[in-house]
Structures are given as structure tokens and as C-alpha cells.
Image (cartoon, rainbow, N blue to C red; front, side, top):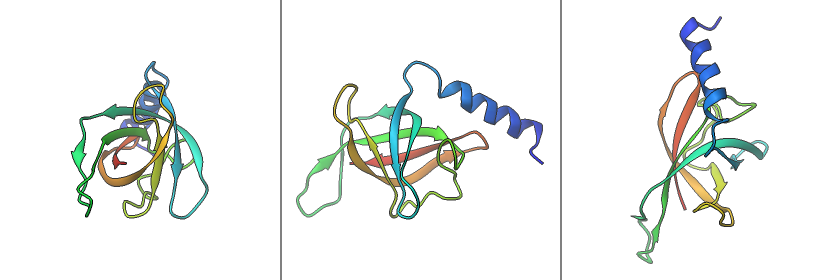
Length: 116
């Protein structure tokens, strides 16, 4: 049974993802079904991507609900193969990014670092 803190964090996540600024992204797990979820995307300056071409790709921190039905569960995320489709800038066409790491998570939300 969830603790009072866990219940509070889950309710807070629901409210947070309804705020202006939240947007729809598409979760593309390595295994499992693709799904659209609400997220808050923090867009950061371009960082170098270790590649033979020396290209650079933007990095995003994406906050989602830590839930396998309405978001992404921290138990299911695969940092080696999952992807998120999101707009690199507001009002731009979404493109596919790769999940690099889980920055942090609690019972309500999870922050993923993605690049692409």
C-alpha cells in the first residue's frame, strides 16, 4: 500500500503535467507499445554527441509521470534503447531522440535526459 508521501507525489504529478507548458510527446520503448504522454520538456543548449562525424545534437530533460499507463514507469525505462519523439523547439515538427539516462525519479514523476 502506498505511503501518504507516495500518494501526495502522484497527485502532484497529475497537477504538474496539466500546467501550461506541458506538451505531448511520444514514447517509443525498445519493447512494448508506443504511446503519447504528457511531459514538461526543458530545452538546453546543444552539447556534443560522441560520433565519428563530430556532429552536435540538442539535449533535453523531460519530466513525465512515473506511471506505466499515463507516463513511463521507472521500472520499464531502457536507457539503452528507448526513444522519445518531441519537438526540438516549440511549434517545430517532432523528431526522435534517444533516452540517455534517468536524471531523477520519485513516486510521482521521472526526469529523463534525452538527446537527438
